[in-house]
Length: 211
Image (cartoon, rainbow, N blue to C red; front, top):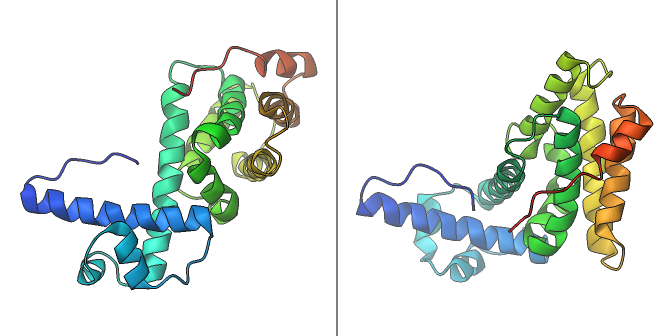
């Protein structure tokens, strides 16, 4: 789960723990069935908190499930960000994001199911991987590494392709996920203006470990 500033006292710690338990329960429901019609009682029982505690943190189920998606997106962004620290080449950053995401279908299946089912509406979100990807696109355009003109439009293409990769990995676990991710990342880099030979080499560089 994403980290935040630690609560200042015991009451705040318990309150934060209760909220996180509700968010975690909502994430589990989204990953397992995607059914947001679950009752508040069922959510509270799954979270192992009292029914009345729900309304101390959320005004509605919609607010809770929105918070659960945001929480998942932010964790996704943090996982990728932590693994690509030290990489300076914008093209390699884009490629590593694709390749690590494919591997997360095995290491973080719950997270990837939420991304597959809920990610499209959040491609231009200010949370998760989107602002990080936009930052890398802007750097690539500014440096001349990428030749596309509009980073926001490029983000739409990247986000849609990434979500299709997640769907492919979850639907076809028998496929070679590393190969599929590298091939898709290479196509994306070529679309961004990276020469073919260069795009191929970048997408085959050693990849940071997810563990």
